[in-house]
Image 1 (cartoon, one colour):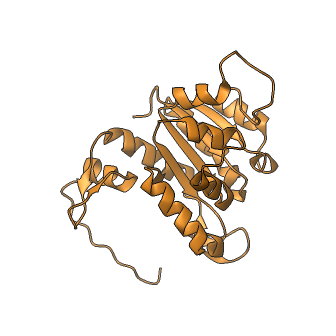
Image 2: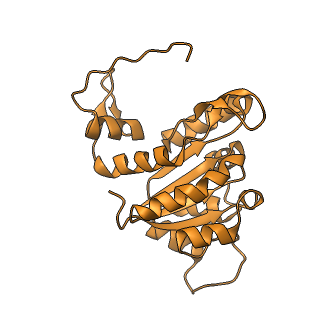
Length: 218
């Protein structure tokens, strides 16, 4: 489902950025064309060289770097993208996007694109559950951004709770399911149309299945 798809992968400054080397590799093995934007914070966790070698494309780290061609680079990326994936999405970049701030290559690109935008929050539990972060996430969802919810487990800060970025294989699966169900929608229990990621997944690969969901201690 990803063969030939152009994916702009935005990597921000969280410890989970290390997973994006594997993520870019998996996307490329699926036949996707991967274009990586590393924020300044992300470069503290993963190198431009690593992402360039894995993606097979130049990596964008600044709006003010060497000009590779005469396209306005953030507009070129925004236009070519079939989908934008921000993983990990820190509380900072979520807040900036919700406020419409465009002060680096990633936030400028997402403000300029009309492609679907997926974001996978990754941060400390308290930061994720903070009402400000939750409001910012809701704001982005209301604008059509597709939330990939974080997982629960052991966090880099030494605590356990919600805030882990899903594994690269799971993120790839979300994008595959999106393209399988592209253009589809399902109705929620209250009759409202669900156009989010999970709606696409349910409408395309889980239709007709009877599910039992348990919320036990594990």
